[in-house]
Image (cartoon, rainbow, N blue to C red; front, side, top):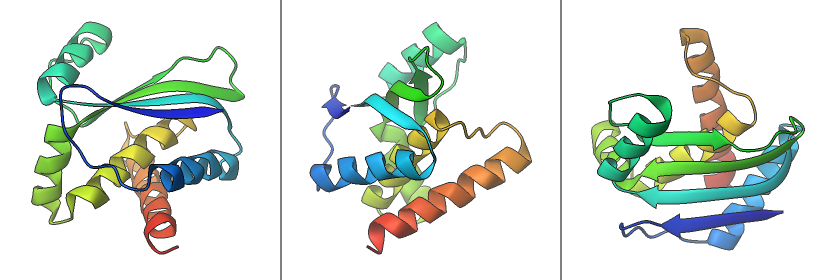
Length: 141
């Protein structure tokens, strides 16, 4: 089981990577989802916009794009692209630290791979609840 973090033409401080990897493994365990490989790529708005246009045919900026790569529904293999520009902007907008917002988005992508969606109001409410639950567990432990 591997979890990797890559910076693509951005700088970001991701502290306590070993602890974060252990927490992510535990998140998948709590959700009853197997985990094989998980790769996070931290990038710019422009890079993520290109991915959004090319693979999802969306011509909008976003904070995250998640790709499930496994053909086995019981075991997750995924890539998660996170725009550091969006993270910084949203942290200021919601008056939280960049570190807190970065972790919210990291957990958001993991939750997508566990089957949570956010297209409807009901799904979005559940996603926010799960994000909040994981943020609390992570930052208060």
